[in-house]
Image 1 (cartoon, rainbow, N blue to C red):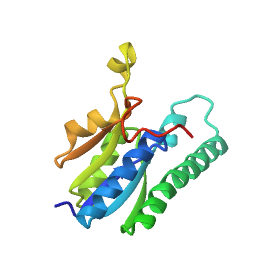
Image 2: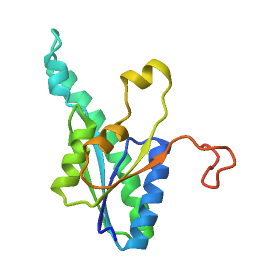
Image 3: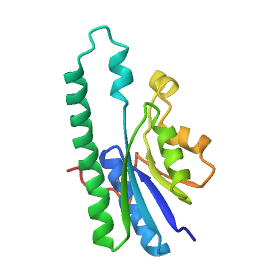
Image 4: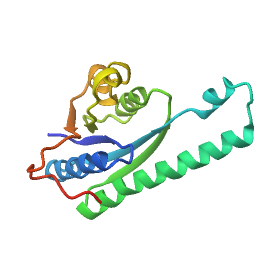
Length: 160
């Protein structure tokens, strides 16, 4: 069925649950997985500011890289525990959905597994979630796990 599954992560608990389910699917299909975290492009953001400080840019990038490594370590450890081949990627892009779709295309992935966050009101209009953008742009199937679950849902676990 699926041979290569891309799994974006933002490090959230919801993202981790989607990764766990995606790795279960990969194991059932005999697929490999690639975890991806997209960092913002600090060079562009800081170049727009009048008080550009290269040391601040370096520090921001180091902190973002450390977070990315932590998030992707979860993907790698979960895949290793399940015996699923795994690779990880850190991408830099101010539009995470572009980096996700471009990576899926470049690595010949045939499924994207991710989570969706629910937003209300004005935030929903302004901050459309990344999963919605990926769904509209991707040419391969996208499996989206909802971030909200009812209390009695079987996958619902107590918060950490």
